[in-house]
Length: 175
Image 1 (cartoon, rainbow, N blue to C red):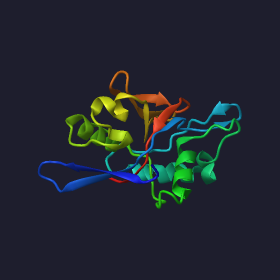
Image 2: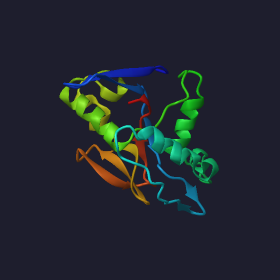
Image 3: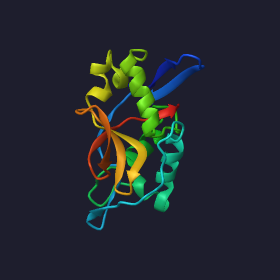
Image 4: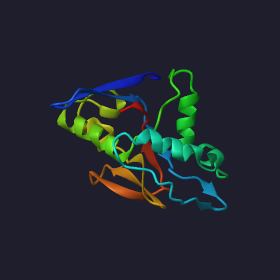
């Protein structure tokens, strides 16, 4: 539905951790946009660390006066354009969604794989039913100027994918 799904993950020796994800998966979106008959590949110096997803998102969304947030000349939506739509949607009640970093997504993946997190569209009833076993999934972390980290569900590993490829994305509010 339109409401966020709250995932509670407890790590031994630490306080309870809450991951708040928009309970929807957005498919076939590109990391970068199309300009002058080519995809724009530029290094934005985004980080892979836990806690950097929100900062990464703000870097990309502010770049070049918001060019990543508008549909390009081919009417192709980027993950950032879709995120802007979710932020503006009054149904979610929140305007602070962001694209998680690779480390943030990896923590969620491991929590789902261990069985400590289940439910919703993202986690499913088990790891086999989760997004990590069924979708290629973008992070907000770059690998190189032309590549960003994404989850490769077929090989069950992280890979540096071309930013012009179609993959899925989920959004979070807290990590």
